[in-house]
Length: 278
Ligand code: PXL
Image (cartoon, rainbow, N blue to C red; front, side, top):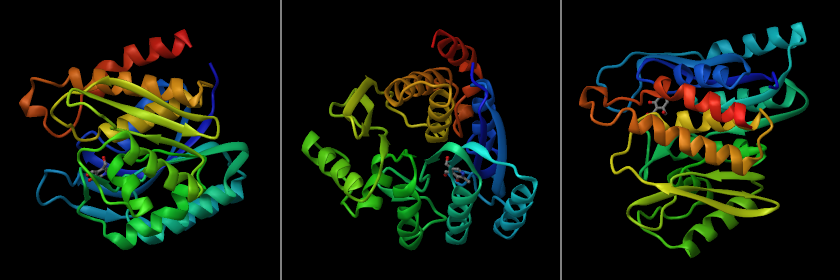
């Protein structure tokens, strides 16, 4: 197996199985040295818990990055998820520009919206500020809501292939290189992921589980990055990430007390064996 050195930048939600508490173990299971830059520390994630605490770490980011620069620390991949502020987006861009090893890849999960609405902490200024980061990255992993925000398209709950083609065309026209568009389904009981890059567009369709689960975007993106950095091509990594995420949801179904996230740990053996098959 390859042993890439990755940096992932996102928040620590201490409880709630999302962002760094998901990315770090999944990337480690994929065999990568995983360095972290926490954008904020929250007592829980913001989707369903009330009265959570937030410690914004924006001010700490330039100093951390400067220390790494001084030490000559560079990364083979940099992967960003949920960020805390527009200022942080600028700091992340600087990290992309200065801390990449030769041939390094950048991955951006815009992590700002779902089901047609922005997450509570964000507004349209934030969504617009995300555009250059997303369009400059080697790989961008939006869901449909995020893709619409990035392309100024109206979000639709039900749609046809022509609409999705238009969203992808607009992402590519804006400069997106490889797009992993998640959660795209044309029938009620299926969903899937579209992988779009210079070589064309491919769709991996799979079973859809009715009830959405929190944190699955982070599970998906972390698995994709880990598999891709093991040398899988984008379509194979996207398909594996879909299978793994589905398994995580299945392993959580039926436990109403676990409403806040998915039991991603229980499916790590499946992920590791699929990675070993290559
Ligand atoms: O999973 C995305 C995410 C990450 N971090 C925090 C969140 C959310 C989604 O709501 O609230 C703090």
